[in-house]
Length: 367
Image (cartoon, rainbow, N blue to C red; front, side):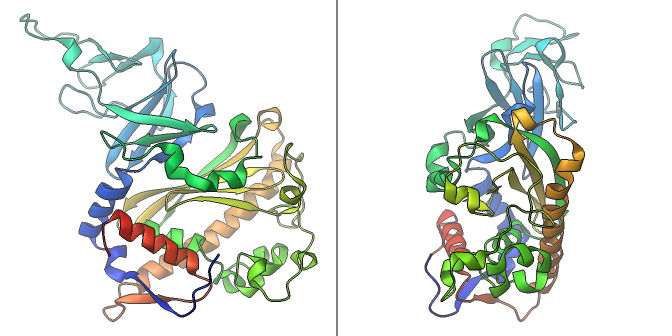
């Protein structure tokens, strides 16, 4: 935590809407970094699959008898998309292209090409599905589209994982998922997430349970004279700040008392960990001026069948906060196109946006 000593310029405004720059970011960041595409609990049995779109690249992730595999969602025959649903199950352990019925094993090997006239020169071994690098971290599934990833998954995630080391992520299941489409560049949403300067005006309900937010900061340590007693008595993110769910086991006393603990994986995903549940938010760019937020509410397996009445407060309240953020991100996207607005200015408490911009420049090899 290092406050900015004076205003600093943002990245250039055209980086938020220029189509060529967006393509450059896809190629140098989204197609080179590890990107989370879901949870292992969605792939419980061999043959279960999920699909994801990263930029304009379609991905299939499935469970085999030996573990998880990922492939491009592309048939080796003439390039047809294989799966058109978000999730499902491959019957009889076979991946079948809907166009000409080329049939693959769950490991991606070509098994059959029905109705093909055989001249004896065709070798099925040369036409396996295009494999995609896959790794997991504590129940989350990540893929990397590079042929040779430049870094290991754990190295990319870095020390942020330490913030949630005591939460039982491996044993948690998604009990609710929504996808929120926001008409803004992915970077605008990440910047909004990275500061609370907007909180007093945009999130009055959130400020009622997070008193430090009323002063435009995430961290009460930034506020002179602030004491732990000033943090209020809220327990979790719910309309009244009170939890209706069983407390998670294994948290330290400080973690239990902290209303929310964030783990931020730059530009792509963050976790909001509470004493009673965890919320994951994944960003997926859908164009220069659109981003999808895939939001999962996670509970321990033993509590995954808890009633809707207990879940509704922790679903409704974050959904309201995200809707408030989305509205402002969309206004930001519209305003940033001004011919006069070449770049913005970061103020003291927006140091995390400064760090994000430095990371972005390093990935784009921009000084």
